[in-house]
Each structure stands twice: as C-alpha cells, then as structure tokens.
Image 1 (tube, rainbow, N blue to C red):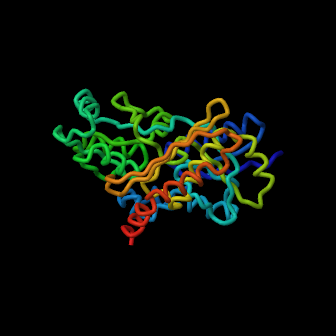
Image 2 (cartoon, rainbow, N blue to C red):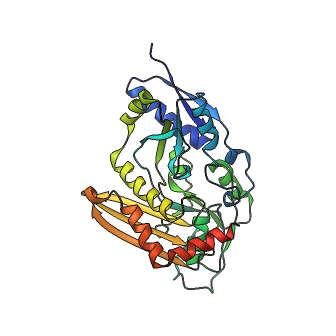
Image 3 (cartoon, one colour):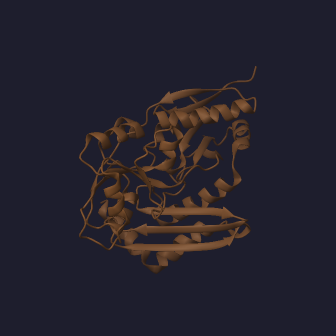
Length: 316
C-alpha cells in the first residue's frame, strides 16, 4: 500500500477547500493523501492589522515548521500569502491553474447608490465619502489614490468572519479577493468587480510546497503544476521581491499570457496612496525570465526608490 501524503492546511473554510482540491487532484492520479489541520498566527490574532504583525509568513510559519519537523509532507497556501523568500529547506513544488485574480467590493446597503458614487469621475470629491474596510495596505493605497476623501477601516479574519463584520458594522462595503469568495460559493450578489485595481502578486493562485530534500514528494506534486500560472506568478513575485521583498507593501502586479506573449503590469504606491509609480511590459514568453526583476529595477530608477525608502522608514 502506498504511503499517504499528509497535506498540511490552515483550518479556515477557504484553506480547507484549497487543500481538499489538492487531495482530489492527487486521488485522480492514484496518490492517497489526507488532511492535517493547523492554526496559523494570522488565524489566531484576528484584531491586529496585518501590516502591524510583520506579515511576512504570518499565514505560513506554522505549516513551515510542520514540514521541517516531518509532521506533514506538503503544505497548501494561497500563493499571495507566501513570502517571496521561502523558509530554508522548503521549496515550491507546484502551482495550480489560476482562478479569478481580481479584487471585489462587497457592498452592505444601497448597492445602486454606491455603484453610482464609484462610477463618478474619481477626481470628484464632492460626493458622499464612503467608509470601506480592508486589512490590505495595497488595497488601501490604491483605493485612496482613486477616492482620496473616503475612509478606510481595518478588517481582519477569515472570509466568513469578514463577511459577517460587513453586516455587523456601519461600513459601506469591504474589499475581498474574488477567488476566495468564489471558491467556497460565498460571493454575494452585492459585489462589484474592481477592474481598475491591480491585484497582489500571485493573487488567485494556489501553491504547494514541500521539503527541499524530499525528492519523491517533489516529483509527485510536480504533476499538478500549471506551466502558465507558474510563469506568471514567478514574474509577479520577482517584481515584488526586487522592489521590497515583502507582501505587507502597497505593491501590485499582474502577468498574463496570450498567444505566447506575456503582458505585465506592476505598480507601487505610497502608504497614503498619493504617490504612484507604474509600468507595463510586453514580451515573448521565451524572453520573460527576468521581466519582473527588470520592471522593478526600471521603477526604482524612475523614482520608486523614494517610495520604498519612505515605506521602510514608516515601519521603524
């Protein structure tokens, strides 16, 4: 009998859904596996803003430790939560096909009115200032850049908890990753796709990691890898890493492949959303290895270095 692969996962509904997907994909290939549930630091502390927690690895450290202590064989993560520098001894084994990468605004009440407000020219400051909730420093900066007179409230917790908080609090709405809500069939009808908001690097993608020395598991999990998603998320994470290296920063990136051509967009904002540096690159997939790195270096040479320095100083 084959040894069961132990799949480590956080115990939130979304995390379990993602890990169960991996379990099913392995089953289809005749590979037995089982889920091992754990709580991360980010699941236990639901009050402190992510940017104040030293967010690097806040959702992955517990599973990293379990991998290194042989408690589990693989760990499944929302890729946008994974630090660009993996823990020593841990490697990426596969990336699954990407789902919806967009951010959405879940509206509490007066859906039509709020839609009308958001559709006004974003230079307009005379309309009703909205109160929008998010724990993401990236979403906050992009929102304030577009709607500088709006108010941002902190929103923490898993997707179920955050949806309940939208109902319980006096906010106009809250920002979520579309993929998270869609995967567990919780996307409300009162949601608006924010097509103008560039996503977090690797948003909508699921990654599987294992121990670097576990060659047998690496080989098995590599069967699940989606090449295009792998290429695109590497470009996006290279961009993030070259700019600052962390996911608690107002940095966004999106790479897409169409007809063997890579289309990349990336940006960085100041914390208050007032300053922005952005870039777009189009290249052949065969010449895309360093797109993320080169794009980040171009932004740094064109003034993004000052934004980066200000963000670092703000954290001291």
